[in-house]
Length: 315
Image (cartoon, rainbow, N blue to C red):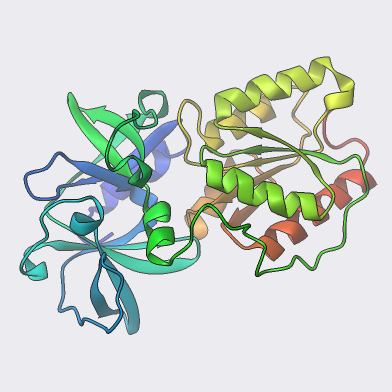
């Protein structure tokens, strides 16, 4: 990240996966601080010249050239209902990479990098006007910080809603898996859970859902007590409240009765670091969200390996 000392980056890399959320804090004018996962941010720049394009979404401030590629710049002031900057050059550009795409977010002043315990974050309370665009809330030095749901913002800009079936325009080409295969899907996003459920249903997988790692551990323990409810595969997000995907994976691997369960980390976090960290805590595979065919193919492959190796999965 531009301007971040190597020692600090090393510290953040080392602490990642310890059930702590690494956040880059930034401001939107005089409003309270907001945050974004550090590992979604490729670079922080003073906002460069932006070019407006016909038919832009109301939240899109323009496009710019970033390292020889054109990227869209989304104005978080507009998205979150704050007065926009008259001159974008007064703000900063967060260049982000997630879900396999690169885009910029226009913000005000960039504050600092912090780590917060995952159990200190919680979903927004009902009635918050911008609730759908904050995934979580936490406190830093006693100050309330909203963690922006950049995936939701990007989906809204792209015109994707939670209503249509995700697969209506994208059939899955993978053949169905043998009947009786059960998968536990763990993700704090209801939309993500539903999207994955649609994919898994098309390939004949029975699916159970959990909204965070703590809830998943309860479901896994229950499966140990009821053999007919055993799971053949665990699919987990990384960023979740209470217990994140890294800590969940580590807990599963440390439990002798669960240690052989195949684990797929399915996250919007892109780049080699996420895959390496997933492997370091014991995940078998890592997949960037969200490609229906890639998910179906990966799940089919992993379940096939489980069938061919009876010792894998729950004993």
